[in-house]
Image (cartoon, rainbow, N blue to C red; front, side, top):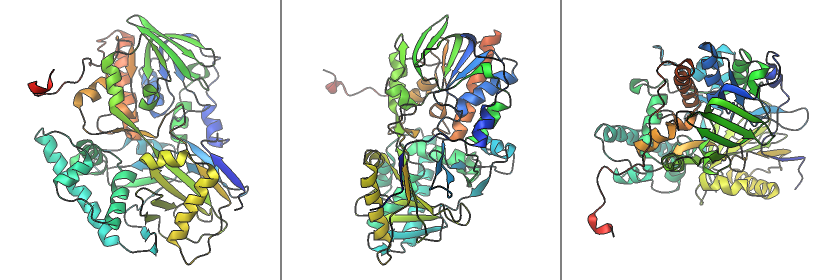
Length: 503
């Protein structure tokens, strides 16, 4: 086996976009005391800062552990010298765009504002099918499973309207008697469920899908716009920040590790030795970070907040990029591979496609859940052998060389994120969502894609939460009807447990 490059994790970009976005108006260094500390410089943090600025409040500091804004929107320069392409480690797509009647995804609005280069992905129409014996056209089974998911979404909506309990999405399939039968249906379900919505909560998967893709249910559109901009997807966040932020309002490359709070204010410490104080703090960390106790809170967060944090899952979603000197694979945008082992490198995307990066020689496979954790823990050479074994299964009559470059994203082990995106498991409990979003002691606020009820795990969720929570902080800073987001109290069953179980 001959390799030119092996790489893992995230590489910082030396891009024009990053340089521009960090050229904030020079106003000196950030002060040690401010009105509002915004902890995290992703979509939620930057939109929160913009909301404060638009309301005439500029006494704030955005603190982030990376050297640039963008949060989990991270692009990497991938490929051998002379054939490099910026590929996205995190979000690729703007999910849902514009319903044509004024309901517009705000991320789509940002993309248009900053002239982001995107292309429509045909995730369900431009797809080739394989199994461990090679090409196998099971498209009929695939589209039947797409219909099964749509049916489950419709039934979930009825359960929600009837106030019926949530269930695991797979259990919902069983209840409806639409379980997959055989390999083609199993891998098709992986594509429809694990790769795309990836929710295990039946009801939550339904409303997130509807509010994103179905205009009749309040969604934007059924369009997925993929970022192909060589400035990187994060450019829309970085450029938006550079439009109004000054150097004394941003503290980068500083990881928060300690937060002390009371009803009179907040103190924050970073691993770089900074000590900051503020009247209010907005925490936009991922739930994965909060679950791993990477940040010490003093006093400890109340039990109802910790229960809410623990109730959400931080999903694993790992991309493995390979570059070859010549393309040998499918001409469609997507490829689906069914193995005897569920989840073994099933979803493939040709980035060399004419609509994306023709001539790049890049193909990417995505794994989720337990298999993502497994893949992330492999030695890169072993990982390459496994992935190449699948490609050679897909093309048994083709002599396939080893790649000239390979790269794997490592969300699970990244201490700044501890996973790819938040996800509601079974069964969804409304009180957990309320408590996740709730303010603590009137001073400690929370926002991000995890706190978005409708759009959890999506960029528009982070946008809306950053904006809406910041608007409530504005009222506190200005002293007009300061109303903390309510919460508190452990979630309890509407119906008590049987007395025979209480000992």
